[in-house]
Structures are given as structure tokens and as C-alpha cells.
Image (cartoon, rainbow, N blue to C red; front, side, top):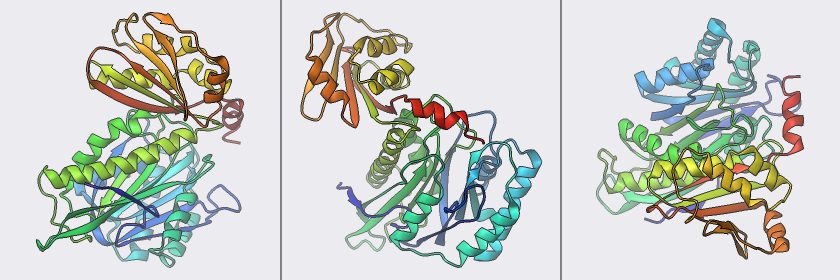
Length: 415
């Protein structure tokens, strides 16, 4: 199956519209609310934060995903997280959904919600509802509308994050194939660490697929995409990843886990990986994307643990920021990952765009060209790979360097 990158994000799939506005939730002079709407009701799947402290919109969305399974609209605000707000926060979710339902002519329990920003303050519900009314009147299926929506949900992000792909599935009428589209947007720059997916993410598709299979696909994709990134080791209270499928592509509905299901899952993986890597590279204050690939592991889970231990290491992150080729830091992070291996047989490499350096082999640090290492460490993406010599399992994790600006950004985030 060929998966092709196409322009756009959440409006790339048929039947999806988006809008955004400057509601004045917290930020002045920029958009801070976004709305997604489907012309037809959607099967919906989701994954949510594992943090015990869950924001009100997480509880709201989780109930809809688990108990209802369909939705038609999403409303997101940036600036205030609606977390640690108790019963008042849940009441504001209900008010937002009711306002959206009236504006769009749909049931309130088909409205999903997302919030990101400062924990603690209550949402200015009058501004939220005013924003909903304005956005409902300006919904558009243009790529520009989707792009604007992806910018509206940003907080400390420096760039918006979106992507879209297309692929083919058998047509519902049995005559040939139809093009299926899948697009997404996400936000996330700090409080990024796995155990769900660690951000706000929204994926739309015109694929016709059974709701249970949609949830299965998402749950199978997350462990090797969003759960393989880390910026700072903090798992947010608001992490939400939703997939909405409206079935308007005209493909034969995916009702069993066969070839069509695997095609859909591959496309979903492509979008989720793209968004995840963009988030890792846009970590707060970051100047480098760090990529760690582990090969030759005995189990998939151990490969994930090893790779994630490296990109989550504060010393590795600081090493990359300082462009200091101190491979001992990578070895150390591998060694405390909680996976048994033989240090005498593993091989560790630093990979650049045009050259590769061997850092470690046969139990010893290898001599390498310091100037060549500096050149590689000066590239935007700094990649390491380690062959564990234990089996055939592999995993890749993504993170970013630790800079002075990370402390500056988070030292006064609230004020």
C-alpha cells in the first residue's frame, strides 16, 4: 500500500470543517480557540492522560468515547487548562457543550472538548460561548481553516503541528478503489512525557471503520509514536488524543482486522509519528531533536525502555545542547534503563546526515574524530543508534536538548 503525504491537516479529509477565533481566554492579540466539525456523525476513539489528576475536559471526553462512541464536533481553548477546577470545571464543560450544540444543531453529548494552559483558574465561560458562536458561523473546509485551527491551540509551541496523508481502500460499491484521507493536528512543547501521548492531538479521517477497530488501531499505534517522545519527564493533566472517522470516503467499511485494517493503521501510524516527532523537536527552549534507535533487543518492550531512557536523560539532553561528544552519558542511560544486557558486545553510533561515528564497541569507548562529532552535533537532528546484540526487536524514541530557555520559560509560566 502506498501512503502519500498531502497538504493540510484536520480539514484534509472529506466532510471536516474548522474555525478559530481570538476569544481572549488568556492571550491578547492571537487566536486561542479552535473548532472542528464533521458534516456527518463520526465514530470516535481516544487515549487520555494516565496522570491521577485529570482535567475536566479529559473526564468529559473519556465518558463520551467510552459510553457513546460517536461525536460530531470538537471545541478547544488555549491559555487555561480547566484542570483542578472541581465541579465548577465539569459544569463549564457542560455549558460549553450546550452552547456548541445550539450553535451547530447537534446533541450536546456529541461535542468533545479540549483545554490547555495554566492549571487552576476557571474558564471565562462567557468568552468561551461567545467564541463558540463566532466559530460556528465561520466553519470552513479549506486547508487554511485547518492551519489556523492548529495555530489557535498552541501555548508555548513555537510552530504549529499538522500533517495529512492519503491512501486507497476498496470501494463500498465493489468497483475499484477510493482515496481515503487522514489528517491531524497537535500541540505540545512542555509537560511532555509518555504514558498516554502527552499533548492535545486531533486526527480526522473520512474512512468508514468500525468504532471498536478504530479504538484498537489507535491503541496499537500510540506505544510506538506518542509514547516514544519526551521533553521534560512531566505527564500533563490534560493529555488527550482523539480520532474521528465520518465514513464519507465511500470505502467498504472496515469491520474486521484484515488487510484494509492494516492499511488504515499504517496511515494512522504515519500521521501520529509525524506529529510526535514535530512535538519532540519543538520542546520548550529546544535547539535540537534527539533520536535514539535501539536494534537487536530481545523484546519490543526492552527496546522501547532502552531508547526512551536515553532521550529522557537530562545529562544526554545537556550533552547535545553543549555539542559535547560525551558518549558515556548515552551508555549510562542505557545501563539504568532496567534492561539486562552485556556491555561487552553492544555497539553505539552517532549518525549524521553525511557521516557515522562509532562511539563504543567491544566494551570500550572508541577513538573518533572530535571535529566530525562536533559537526554532527551541530545538526538540527542528533541521532544515536545502539545494537544490543540480543535479538531482532527494535524501537525509536525522540526527545530534545535541555537549554537555558527551558528554565526561563517554565520559571514564570503562570505569571
